[in-house]
Image 1: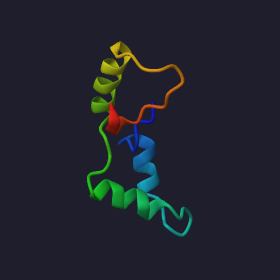
Image 2: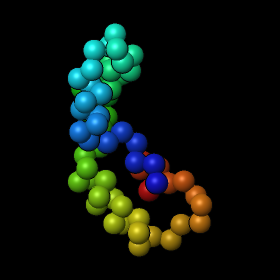
Image 3: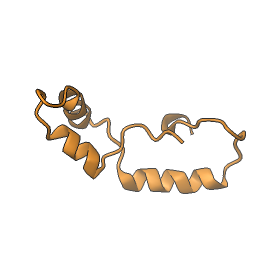
Length: 66
């Protein structure tokens, strides 16, 4: 399961970094500001639905497609 970008404590820490020490800090901040992060609660609800759904073994499931 590839959940995409999830709003976690680690994601917040990445956004708070100085772009000089962490080049991707601005990209993480832009994703947050654009509303591209998925909440932890939404991921949990989604995972519960996936547990009961039939999928081909070994198939990578992206959040947006399931």
